[in-house]
Length: 282
Image (cartoon, rainbow, N blue to C red; front, side, top):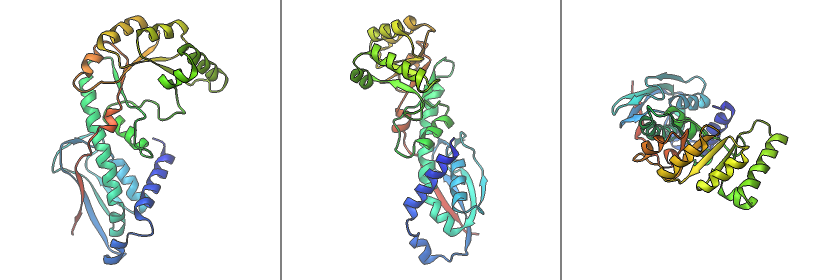
């Protein structure tokens, strides 16, 4: 994980919530008072965001003592405690909502991702996420996918060339788009991988004829057409299936031998997990 980006995310999120002060806490709790709080798990989940929670608390106050009881990636059960934190009460209350929002969202994504990856056990196919993420929260959403057992596709527009339908249509043809991208990589960004989206078997044949790409995306292909495409491509290029793939049909897609399945749903359709941060009076 990019630690610099993570620090910026945490600082901006704390500033968004605190503004010119947590006036509720300032109004009713003395600044010198310290306390303890626990993170309670309230439903079955794959836990994610514990390490981030510690970083949030320690960014707010480096003197915080944080005790991890459940690790990221572990199955968690209703009633369990993920961590204990000992800190000034002002720090606990300032960080409470950001910690909960982060862990609830990340745990939801990790839980859904694990459901998908469990179904892929025994198959060659690997699960990828997409750029269908929440603005300014992509770093942690993609980390949650990794914790859940999936793999990260490109993080942004900067770390891979992906020629999708609009690029191809604006460029004029699939051949012209590939050639232009290939020349760009050779002259401007050596080593950058090229992926091209195909919409039918005819597109696949056109890509095969020109080559010069690393991966072929097979978008919204039926199972039958996907099987035909995989046979046509062989091992010449990496293959990725995308579009309309769900928990109910992912095994059928994996059985074709496709290298990757990409899913935006593991992030944008994930449901937040019920967690709470509770004060412990000692």
